[in-house]
Length: 298
Length: 298
Image (cartoon, rainbow over all chains, first blue to last red; front, side):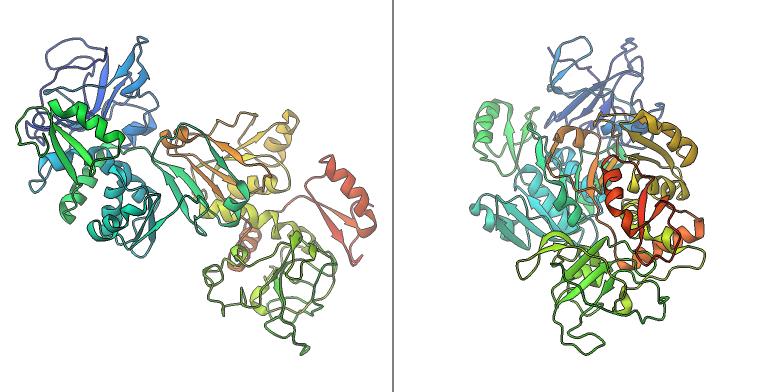
């Protein structure tokens, strides 16, 4: 049911093993097929694959620098108003997108990210979703200045990377969690400065910024007066553009920050889904689609 | 029922006629009275008076630069967490604050604003509430850069000043109103670039910032996904500190921006209240408490 093009990586910046944020199409792929649809993929293929987003797009949308859309001109392809989400969205022909796995692709060179030599490929995989999802708002909302106090609500796939990034940016980091059991992990393993257990949503300080990166289904109830009184801000952020994704990868390489992962074989996927429901993973599964690495779990 | 100290203006920056944002107290006023309570007042007295805020404060709070509270150290006295609002708030002794009018005060010099010679006093009055209330968020939220597009929702006492300020900062300004009748006023008299009638709350553009300056009683319903998808921001702002109030006044003097007012005598107050309920004022009443000016309405 889901659509994708079969492409081969050819970009000079890219090893044959890695394709990230791949955009196909441009009215025709290298095989000469007149394919009018395009896909923007944030993926990681051959060896390991994590199909995180597959965003088919209208032909007139985010095609490298050709587009007139502000989001594309300004290195913010992720905010393209014509994008279609990989999972559970309606495609142009009315079908529903289901995501997918694959091992080769051809893509526009602008949609590749160069992976520095000191980062292993399996470790990079979660950075392309969790990593950029927390990196971008830390930068955009000005939380990247030494001396600031950054709170990370929820210590999971995104949260544990956020702690590492914010620490590397010089912030004091507090992990806010509903699980007291995560205290030791937060302080000792991830290097957070403090931890507290809270279900209280009214902890946002004077001039605080609450940045949401998770798509809650229900609307939030937002009392206005506290927002005024404390000059507080509530903002959203959704992944990041190509330029910033490269910046994030280089930042990770420079500071030697790595997400904590568990490499699994494809056969383990169903089990991993059961474990995911119990939040039993630290902190991301990476699927070894090509069976090229020894899975850490099998 | 309301409390205030009777003070006389003595600051060198201040003409004897004007006291703005007055803070009394410091454990004793110039008359030697050991008065433990303090008041931060945003007022405008003798000749004309608009008691906009009277904020009694704890002695240990925003006393000039002596305080250790962040809001006071950083020229943000208006966000002092120990402030008590003038109207309808509970004072330390359990009584309810009602605001008030008066004609003389003594205050700490740090809480005076200098009024440039080219601004008449009646015109300045609304700036000390409406003016700083819209000036501060335009600056804080980075909406003061030429080329940006600023929307002003609601064309009243605050809105009409916001249009003037945003235009002077170089923005393109759109007035958004539920009243088609305000179109001519917005475009011809206030200089807005465009106008549209809307009750639709989903007009916020990609990367838009919605800054609330009015204290709505009911919580807003905030859908999260649109916030993420457009990297939108919702923020609050409440008046401004002493330093920024002075900056705003100087900005007004430099650009010759004046709020539109109607000067009334004290005897007209009840009538003005009736007219306020019908939104029948452009755009602020200024009360001539001292009967020193000829009221424009009587």
